[in-house]
Length: 406
Image 1 (cartoon, rainbow, N blue to C red):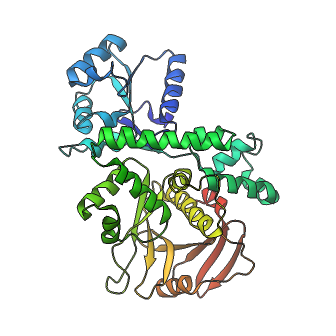
Image 2: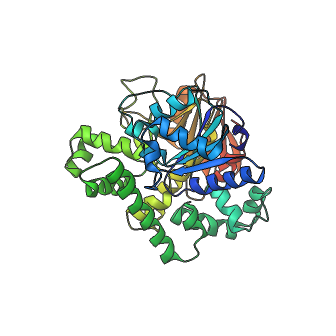
C-alpha cells in the first residue's frame, strides 16, 4: 500500500468498521509529514467536514487552501458520501496534482444512485481483522516473527491455547489487545451496535434494524451451511427481495462473505444456494451469545471452517481465482473448491485430531470425478501426504496456508 502512494490512481482502503483503517491512515499521514510532505485530512464522520463535500469545487478550494498546488488528500469514511464514485471520478479526471487516499467501511456501490465505474482510476486494498498468524505474533511478543510456523509446531500446548482464544474472540484489533474477557465482549458489543446504528440504520435507512440483527444471528447459527432464501425470509417476516437486499448490505459493509456452488453439470450438482461466512469469527460468536464460551466441538468445527475460509480468501487474493463449495443432489459435498480457471483445487476442512490418512467418501468422489493435480485436507496439526490415483492429497495444518505460493 505504501508503495502505491507515488502513483496517480486513487488509493482506496476498505474493510469492516473498527479493523484499524483510520489508525493506518493516521500512521501514513505521520510518515508523510516526517518527510516534509503536505497532507490534508477530512473525515465524513465529522459534521464540520461534511460541507466541503457539497461539491467538487468546495473540496478542491479547501484542498488548495491547505495544500497549495500539490499534496495528499486523505478522506475517511467515504461511504457516507452520496454517489461517491461519481464525485471522486470528477476530481480525478481533472488531472490535478493531488493524490487521493480514501477509506470506507462500506463499498462505494452502497449509496451509488448512478453506477459510475472508477475502473482504471483506483487501486483498492481491503483491510481484514487481525489474522491468526498476526494474532499469534502479537501474543508471542513478536519473538518468532520469522519462525511462527516452527514455533506452533514445536509448542503444541501454547498453540492450542492461542487457537482456542482466536476461535472464541476473533481478530478485531481492540478485542485482541484487551486482556479481560468481559471487556472483550463489551468491545464487540459496541462494535456491532455501532455497525448497525451507523452503517445499517443511518447510512442505509433500513426501517427494521431488529430484523437485520436477527438475520445476522440466524446466519451465525448456520455458519458454513446452505442458505434457503424462502425459509429464511419466512423466519424473518421479510420478502425474498428484501432479504436479498439485506444480505447484499451485509456483504458490502464487510460483515459477511458469500460463496456460491461449483458445478460442471447443472442438473446433478445442486442449486444456486449460497453459503455465508463471517469476516470476523468473534462477531459471529457474539451474535449467538457464545463469545468466550465456545465449548461444543461441533460449533468449534464450524468456526474453524470459517477461519479456513478467511485464509483461503487471502490465498487467492489477486490471482483472479474464485472460491466455491461443491454439493451434489445425493449430498456429496466438499467444503471449498478453488477454481483456477484451467484446473480446480478441492479443500476439505477437519477440526478434530486426525490419526490416520483417511479420506471421506465425498472428498474421494470429487477427486475421482475431476482428477485434480492436488487436493488439500486442512486440519489443526497434521502435515502429511497420500495419493488417490494421480491426485496428491496434502494434509496441511491451517497455519501453513499463508506460507504457500498460489
